[in-house]
Length: 486
Ligand code: SF4
Ligand code: SF4
Image (cartoon, rainbow, N blue to C red; front, side):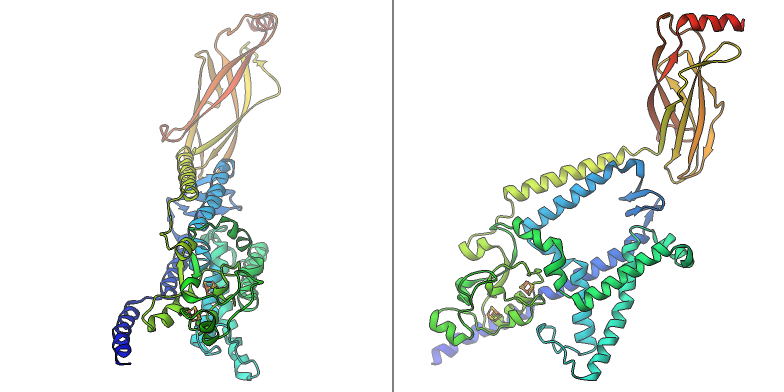
């Protein structure tokens, strides 16, 4: 007896020491929630050279990405962004399971604010953060009033969160201007209030059912899992078998520690159910991996506390099936994760490269239906419509030159023209042949030329080249007109 007591003491001391330095995942997650929230709120207000970090602005038909502005004509970047999004999801899920859900998803952050901060800490509607199964006692009228306060507080935050979402489509500078004039911006106001209303219904009434039944990510994530994917896992080798097998249809074999020890004398689970009580999606992690698990790691914290007090390691850990089942180290670098990482890097590289190819002006050239015409003094001219667009964020003066043939010159316009930032201008352009260019008497001769358009004030950076043709008429027709003009 004395030996047992002596052996228990250092163990307890070790446990105390361990728990003293232990920082629950919950606290780490709260810090990340704070960082994510601040970044999401501040980012729309940060501008470099008048451009946002990310803005998909349908109003001005622009995409801002990494503080570079692209016009809708330049949306060749969108497929790369979508590829990055999907590859990023595949990579993250294969490596860390539903790490997004537990650590950064707005739904999880909102629920923590509403349930754990408002309902539990502030209004004491719920007794403890560590018991999410116990619903408030709705028979008490004061609890209904408190719930009203919680909904009111959340409604204010929902309006801010919805506005923050809208700011990635309508920049804050426009948003605040538009809402001062609601009658003229009913669509925007409708979207904003609609999103806020959805957030209220979602967070107050749908709760984690959104993650379980609505969120498409929960449906697809399990197919990306493998033996090395990190997730919250119960160690049944140490803890014992509480269920007959994994999954929803498994049967609970033991309900208390006595039953467990009768079946498996060495099993360490105390059957305290702390890991079950704390689970926001109301599952029992000891049943194995389940679609409902949002990787919040609250069960890991709960068991760490229980087992830590006994001087033991937690039975529920954030680890891989390989570590639990085979006792081997997790393989973070494996063909799938390497392939995703390489693909992600390539797409990101391509995106950056495409970004550097951004044209600071746009030019569309249309040749008129009449292939050529003659002026009263016998000149052969071709007419074009040039559509210029200044995609830079300051005004510029534009002009152009003809390359590819020294005898084709500009007749009109005769001088550069100014274009404000973001504006378009249609210009009628007339080119003429300074001398005969072809002497084919059977057909007209198309002559390839290159138009080099540029900003006069910054011709090195703001320059585009377009190919087109100058059509020279049949030589006999050209000669007739030349003679007439003499
Ligand atoms: S089982 Fe429940 S508590 Fe544990 S990580 Fe999953 S959702 Fe969170
Ligand atoms: S918290 Fe740990 S000890 Fe308690 S029931 Fe869950 S797994 Fe068992």
